[in-house]
Length: 478
Image (tube, rainbow, N blue to C red; front, side):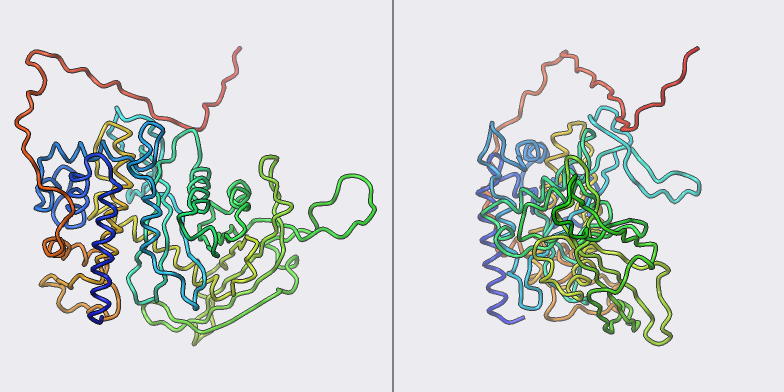
């Protein structure tokens, strides 16, 4: 990396930190210290241990005060502190290149297990892998929906994302409803570039249903690429019925993904060689059928929102054998979907899995699910704070030096023109902070708090029930 590029990266990081400091509002000094200690964390296994990090210049009580004072979204009572935080993060993302002339966004949901927090409100059943045979992969806790921008990268680059929003999925709603409101807020924000330019969103099959797709159909510059289950049934455009009486025909012949007899000839097909991350030569084959329809509901009619279906298959380049038993089906919906080629669709959806790397890294070195608090509001503040810490690591990646462990000296060295991985940037972040400094003011001792009056009894927190969405079956009475 050239000297001018390093200088630009340093100025971008300093400018972002100054703007972030101004947006943090109350307890901004402690909040920025908390973000720096998260980014430089290499030993803490719990949130309170971050107060022992040299980047946190205050007592551990200030750590909890910073989490309590942080407001991830503007409220009627305090509309100013974090207004424009997602817009501030979006300003740091490079503009699309001619090779990928659109903004790429991703959305997904991840669990936050809290099985032993009996006093925590609104806990439900969440997914959690369980290695014990015969046990169900479930736990008790919360779900969080995350919307992130996916910067352009090659396959050899580390899988970075730029988190924009993180919001808890309440028990009285669904993950798709929360994701739809998050995406609508991002796309409708005039301070962000996604409303006026072409933007593409990638998601798994959970987001390929009518309720979610209909909510985003109002944005003319937005295209959704979502995976579809292999047993879905769609419809072709209805035949023309000029002058016919009665209700108009909305759907034509059935297009069954599991029945090749109903497909017909694809409108577009492409094939190109590729290779896996391990270097295995493969061949990709994609086919596209245009202007299909899905049946909606009364609240989400879909007869006026056509989409394309793409079938993806992977073959071994030498033997020609299919590497997967079933093909990958993708839905491409949006008014500007025709501007995307088959190769761009496949590459965009492949980058969706970068979100999984973010969840894994966030839940271990960044302590994303380690905040053991009985206060639901504090937990909801913690997740956006961790996302901001991850954005700081992403901006500091061009400036960080690789510091391998003694047992890692034989691993492949990162390329000179690529960013380091999040874990490697975190190892060197403490040095960067010492060099560039911090906008946070030095701590001022206020004396020792008197605390609770001696003899005052503490109140026991109420034990709250677990929320089960499925209602119990009614039993017949004699």
